[in-house]
Image 1 (tube, rainbow, N blue to C red):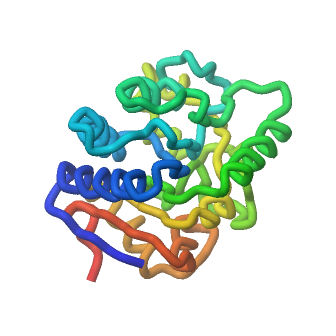
Image 2: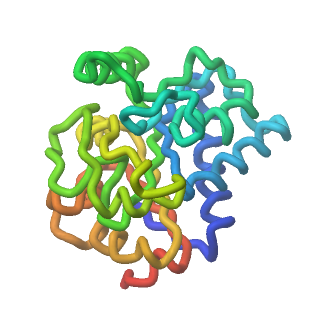
Length: 242
């Protein structure tokens, strides 16, 4: 596990974007696992700038997003499909047929989850997976006490997660209570993982990720067992580290 502590959010975003861009330059047909939320926004902005400077070509890349709110149409402004399109995909030359986000609305959730797993496998597996982290240690939407063997599945969102995400909605009552998420097993099958964290509110979760007992109570602790993880933190998120 490699730990990089940088001064601030901007430096974290630049470093993460540099790693992703290098992956795509080395392997133009890369399979990228992508995350949403506040944390990776700066990384996407940096990648768009690299694309505009002709430093990276996304035309052969395939992407798989970690998760999606259950019950939201993809056109909903709070859906993660909408987030990805309006913060990244529409600004680069990626083939939209190569973009994959879990379906938020489905008549058969279990079948759609199995189909998502099959697509990842048929693509050859994820080369590099970007993760954020929740204050409770969740990665993707894998909440505390999730089964480490889980693949893509429907999850009940933790109260802390719902409260944290309420800032994106008009009220906490509008926040979906469920989501479709890649499971821990799916995440761990990625060849490389980048975990991004910024702000003092994530400091305890980061400490537990690195030094805590590996336990479903801290989903991110399982990353201690992965062979290639890079954790990029700003100084605030690294406050509790030795």
